Length: 402
Image (cartoon, rainbow, N blue to C red; front, side):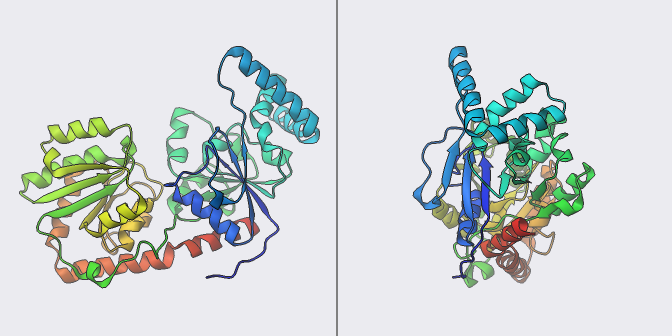
């Protein structure tokens, strides 16, 4: 166990809600910072119930502005009064900064009401866990005399601006330290005018002691019925319909296989119907949500992991599969190209081209046992060395202390 260090910094982490059991990135980050001696304050924009005792940090929730007109009006007025009564200097400064950014007084007061819950704590850093959480809060850090940090995790950098054009225009003018998951995301931020020196690449990491392969997993041959697997929420960005089309190509080639999809989401019914129409429903299982131990056991008995996403910040599940010695085939979406090194630790295939995916799987099957073992070994070694929690924790410590 690493020796705990002492830090005087207090990190304010802004999230939509308290991280759930499956949200390992934020849970690991909080635990890692605490282990290094940081104090963490968690700000959540939605009412989210109690936080698990294991977190051991203060949780501040935003007021709920839902309900009837009169209820919202009363809560808004009371929030505004409390802001100027208990945090007058911060409230005044926030309004002044907003007005300087050409917001009207009415708009500035509305933004103050929305952000007042962030004024109650003294923090060294105010770190927004997703890009869109910083939108509308661009001046909060300056108002409370904290340094500002923002994490971009993929969809918030690539999809949110499509839904909300110019949503980051004001943010990119502010003094912010950015955390991204891949070098590609870093270059995309640079293209938006963000200084390269303000951007830090810290990749996701996994518990390599939990997801640990053994010699048998590295040397075993593929099963007579190839076991393929994906762990992902059932959302269109995961490219699962394209993956099912690739499964149909495998069936046409008389390859015996079974494909397991672990995860839940809004697309389940549509994907099941797609599997039916593609005549692969008998070869596909929708396993739903599984606990981490069950996911690990499913990965251990799988031959090939597929992550054929249209958009993917990086992909923790791909790291977990590689750590267990499962051969991985992924799309070239965003950070996946850095997660898997083509023909060295796995294979990268152009997205939205299911025939290419099927062809790559066919080629993989034809490899000799020695060639498969070499790929598995490289993948396991790379994940253990470059994507472990200790390394990630050290990088976040450096992020806050530079």
